[in-house]
Image 1: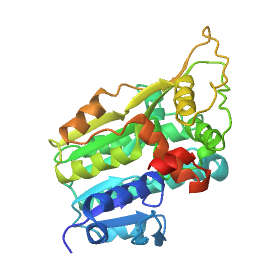
Image 2: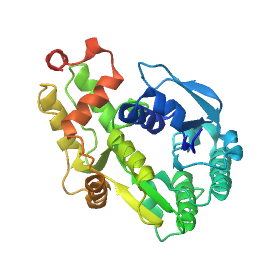
Image 3: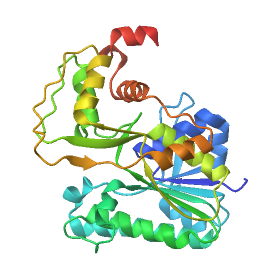
Length: 311
């Protein structure tokens, strides 16, 4: 086969979206011939394709790949796993993933590489790592350093994600967006519980993955690139109001104290939107992002009837 694209973390939210978008862009045969999907173990990955699941290989298989065309690296244990595994096992597991990727990059020294990091890493910018207090952010910064060191003769791009929308959303109850959509789809009035103003920057994962595939095919100038993956920045009250209007619900409930310091997890969208424009990718409208996210979360009979009929 021709030199393949490598996708790690293929069974996760972002990874399944990457598979979906590649198949939508290039077709089912191209996906299965062009892309090597990697997961924690060899398995079939169902990503909603009418053409069936795709076979993924274990991350161990990366040791034998010396002819890759490019890498999208999405494998990382999320912060929710700290409580499940305990800090020590969590740190060891993520460092093992990073070490395997480092070895792969040595075997494939000039290919373009793209990864996702987190806005949580920005909290530690310019500070010492805090593995005890914030292992997730500290480990994300460790992996960003690998990309920074690799950005010599190759394009090495890191995209920091703050909040996200799109199909395959993982554990919707963990996120305000998922909670709001869950209530809206059930016809319930949305409630914003925090008394503080909460600001979030969102990226549509499908749009981001289309950008990643385009960047692998037409890489930017070799070197390190760090981008905040942001398309929309708004308060949770604004988000609740938009969802309420889309689902024809009453005004959301909230009691915000403007004297409290805002909870801001956000960044500027300029660089990300410029990249989308450069590659000719149109950002999905926020309302369409919300409908897509909701459609992937619940069966058709639970969705808004009028919306289902018109689409």
